[in-house]
Length: 429
Image 1 (cartoon, rainbow, N blue to C red):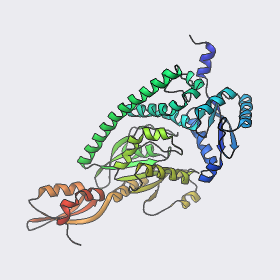
Image 2 (image 1 turned 30 degrees about the vertical axis):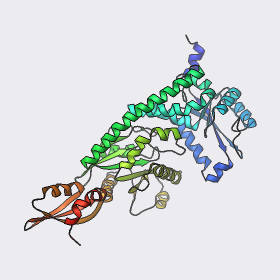
Image 3 (image 1 turned 135 degrees about the horizontal axis):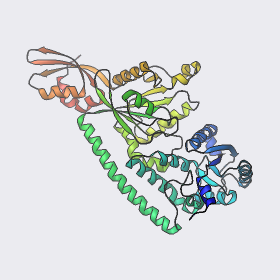
Image 4 (image 1 turned 135 degrees about the vertical axis):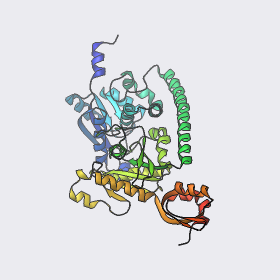
C-alpha cells in the first residue's frame, strides 16, 4: 500500500517554472521566442499547471548534457527551492539523457514542450480513433527516451507528463512498447480504412465538403456550433476539442454541404503527433473549400497564420480554395481591424453575430460556385438532367421544341469531374 506522503505527492498540483533557451539557430529562423514562451504559458495553464516563474537563457547551441548549461541549472534549482516548484517545463524538446541529468540535479519533474502538448491531447481525446492516435504519439515519443524518464513514469497519475503509458522494468518495457506501437498502428489502419470508406461514400453521393482549419483556440468549434447547432465542447482553452466533427450546413440557396471542424494547429506541433493524426488531418484534402479561421485579436496573428499555412502545405492541401475568416472582431481595437486584409477571400467576423454568420454562408456559396452556364438538354436525356442537379444549382429552365434549356450555377470541382459528359451540351456564350 502506498504511503500517505506518496499519495499527497501524487495528487499535488503541478507548480512549475517555465524555461526557454534561445539559440543562434532559433534567431536565424525568425521565430519570436517570446511569443513561443507566451504560448507555453497558455499550454501549461490549459494542462492545469500553476506557473510560478519564467527563466530565460541565451546560448549559441544547447548544452548536450544540461541543455541550458550547468550554471543556469543551478540558478533554476535555487529558484525552484525559493518558490516551492515541483516541475520545470522547457519550451524546446529534450533528449532522454538531458531529462535524466536535469531530474538528478534538480529533483523536479522535467517536462518539455512536446510532452506537455501530448499530455493535453491525452486529456482531450474522446473517440476510439483519437485515443489510439494520442497513445501512439506518446509511445513513439517515449521509446527513444525511456531511460531518461524514470521519475516521471513512476508517478502514475501524478499530473502532466504521466497520462498514458506507465513504467515497468526497462528492457521489458521497451519490448512491450514496441509491441504496443505495432498493435496501435494495426488498429489505426483499420480506422483509416473505415474513414476512407466514408470518404468514398461521400464522393459518390456528390456531397460537397467544407473544412474549418486554424490555430488552436481561434474559434473553429464555436463557429461550427453557431452555423449548424452542433453539440460540441467549447472552452477558451488550447485544444478544447480534439476529435473532428462534421455537420450538415444549409446554404442560402438551399444546397447542403458537410462542414468539418478539424484539430487546431500550433507552433512546433510534435512530429509524432502530426504523424499519428495524419489520417484525421487529411480530411482537409477532401474538402472542396477551406475556411481558415484566425483569431484576429491575437498579438501572434501573423505567426499563427504562417503555421497553419505551413501545415496545410505539408498535408498537400495548400492549393485548396480558401477563405480567411478573421474571427473575434468584437475583441479587437479599431486600429487592429483596420490592419486586417480586406477584399475577396477575407471576412472580418464574430461567431456570435447573426449578420456575420449569414455573410459566411453566402461567401461559402459564392466560393463553391463556378460560372453560370446554360445547357441544352434533349428532353429524353433524364440522366443528364439529374447530373446537372448534382454539379450545381439549377436557377432557371425553359423549353424549346424537344430540348430543355437549363441555367446552372455550377460547382467548380463537381463540374470539372463531370464536364466530359456535359460540355457538348453547354451553349456557347
